[in-house]
Image (cartoon, rainbow, N blue to C red; front, top):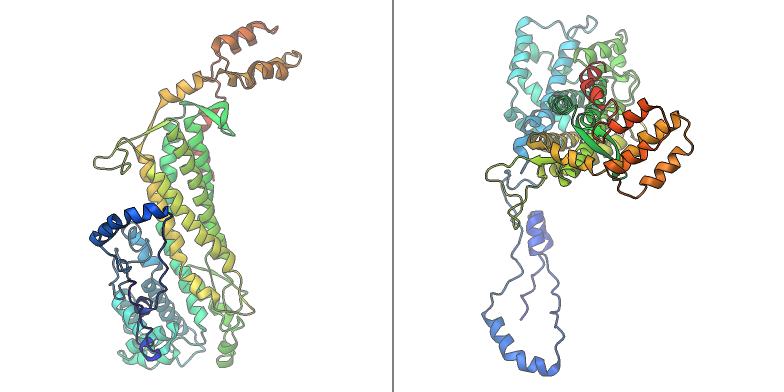
Length: 531
């Protein structure tokens, strides 16, 4: 018989149930059992056996994976792998991009604004703060903890407004100091929530960038080290997947290092903008209360005092263009890392690199011999996640209806997601690079199997000496064919050209035909310093 149908809960009961519970008790359609095709006579003969098997088999109720409605949050129960599986790898970013970090940044901005108001002579209602009052505020900021942020979130349950909850908690602290109690209504004076938010987000981004840049620098440094170490290691190039003019392993690492260094340099120079211009960017409320104050100058002084760049033209929001610039820089850096991941993966697959084994690690659940390039694969996957987030942030944040809509609010809470996946990727790439062992013998063998790559220099020297149809002659000799050392030398020996040029071609091998690759690899440190 079929399992009994679940009874739908009443409307009143639904109001008190969690989403998981609702899902668990929802009526489920029961599919009709499938009957495999068996000839009539065979079905009759097999019936007793089939009944015996079914009667002895365990019966599933269909509820083997019912959701549990009240799981406590932990690294095992977190929905996002950023907070679960990879939580330890990006723990440092919690102080930059968590809800606690946002609340703390808002508190800092609100307190600093109150201190700024006290420095404006025309605002006589907020006289200059005493040393004791400033010390009280500084201690409040220094001691601000997740417990204080939790209090803000508790107040928000009543206000249903996150920034207003911050204001109320700050006022609750100010009443504890007589001098500050008298001016507590100037907390959040003339501000719209976005005045506080845009500056908070800029502070969070600054701290996040400060965390990520050292990892970027480490990747660049490791690759530069490999560029110089392997500057003279000859290697077959491949264009379109086919053997091409040789290079050196160091030169190929130098290519990547320089590309990464350019993006890292650009990222460090993106200005972080901020505004403090009120509800629509015109200082309307400010000027209604104190028309004699140069509020735009005050706003610029305040924003720059936070270490940010003043944005003079705004609506209710800072337009977020700088965020798109910043995220695009990280995205480009990530794309170059992904390009490296795939190249190293491919070189491992053809034997150019070996991977150091780690005791206890398993490469495959069924094939014991395998040492898979999992670090580069992990990095590639996480970069995909990071860049998908940065792509959306960069496209969405600069767009807001008229003077402001709220679509940026929920999106901005995900800034840390892109940085989190990036950080995981960087650590994986670094781990993978640390396991690499160059297989110079495999590279040399590959070069020795591809003497036809010398067709390029031979036909070029033939052009110099005005030998007829040089390209066509080498094409006839080499295209789609394997040519060994003796075959190439025999061709060169028959050429009518000066003996010096002929001898240079005779002495050339695929391993020595590397142009100035070694010099370029050794010059990478100077080139990066010049950026």
